[in-house]
Length: 171
Image 1: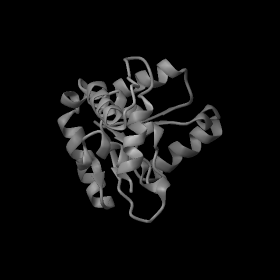
Image 2: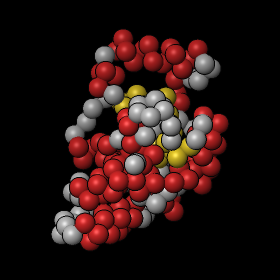
Image 3: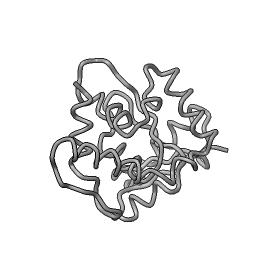
Image 4: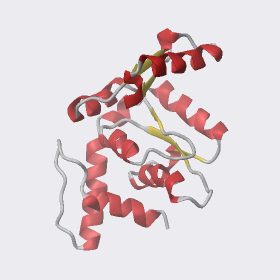
């Protein structure tokens, strides 16, 4: 049985948690399938990605850093490749494309649901093992191309070279 984990600082407030659970109940989704969490330390936050099979990027305003974190931790992210002309709605699509997975960027809601189902069905385990290595390779290639000597290492945020690679692909 699938579960949905949502994380937001406002879930510290009982009233907010109850409202969210009531919304899901109205859609026929029982509380036992919803895991609401609030903020945590950086190491705990990153460890959360080891608990999930697929990260679902928010629609209309993409997650940006959250998508990079998921990819860094080896968790596939389903994103919407919105073509509405707004940078904020395309950041995550650029990130998964730069990381070598343009197939995770959905063109519409139907594709978003289909891609998520396929990734959940596969368990994502084959992807998880190589998340950091894929990002490091992409970042190193971009650094070499741009003449930068910046490198990444486990336990550190990806180098700016990856972010630069992401930004150039968006054009």
